[in-house]
Image 1 (cartoon, rainbow, N blue to C red):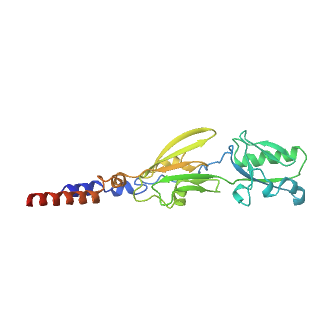
Image 2: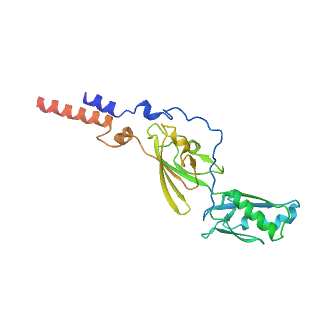
Image 3: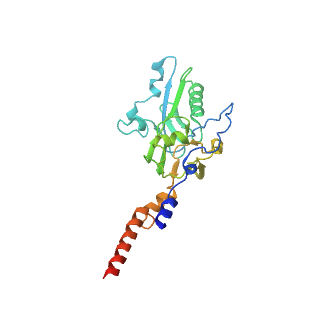
Length: 246
């Protein structure tokens, strides 16, 4: 009976395992997509072109010469944003981009090229090359992942890691560092109210932590593991029988 009780206690209920036990929220006509804000140590790809492509070549230096480039790694062939939030574009000079979205950075560089008379009708495309998040704990493939989407949802991030294991608690923690400040958030995947949470979208450098459930914690210890308990009880019973027969 004791062993049976321990086995039952170590089991997780179906309600604790399923996503969205509550009904899904009513679909919204408009959806607020997340924006990525440029921060120090970001690596930016900045592509500049114009009606006459040859005129823009001087503003697009070779990847191996770009700030922060190392070897042939495409993720590092970009401008490394300095601690003061600036990058130095050939001819155009220093541009302050800290705190800007990628769209705002494109418009600022485009405006500077026009106002200084360097190019007519320039087109600027900025992309973040080293946007990454880290996911730890009870997922099938924990680690650090790079993503290139402007908006990445938490569910997509879980998909990168192969989803939660059966032993993962559906209430997860997100640690976020943005603009020099660190914040924490908790998402309960069994509910649906987190669709409007600021942590619905993953931001660069987020750390996602999935803790083990009670069953996994118990199984990690000698006493808490039902299999080990059965073995211990069997040894004790055998010892008692042997002692009685002596």
